[in-house]
Amino acid sequence: MPLAPTPDPPYTAVIFSSKRTEGDNGYAVMAARMFRLAAAQPGYLGVESTGDGELGITVSYWATEVDAAAWKQVAEHLVAQTRGQSAWYSDYRVRVSTVTRDYGPPAS
Image 1 (cartoon, rainbow, N blue to C red):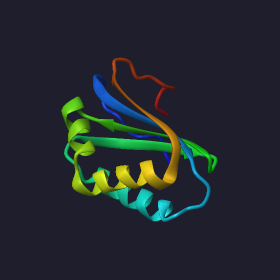
Image 2 (spheres, rainbow, N blue to C red):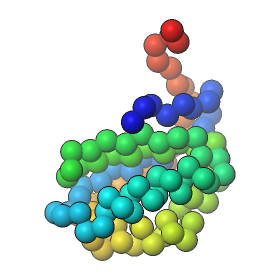
Image 3 (cartoon, helix red, strand yellow):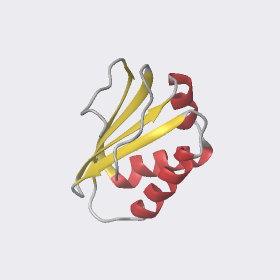
């Protein structure tokens, strides 16, 4: 997965850190669906995600905090959140922040 192409700040980052339960229990299919669905939402800028099967972190980027909050309320995403709480995660945290600086190596 490449790094998300984000614009000049400010923009919003939603950081989702999680500890998975054992077994897939339909997780992979739903996760793939959520990545596709998020990408179709207004204000979506991109996503970066990594994990080792037990611990994971996904950062989604949004043009504004309003866009990020709207994504949280999308009906299918609400279903995934409920399923996550009941079956997929033994622990998780969601952190929402405003990105004020964004830098990396010079473009080649």
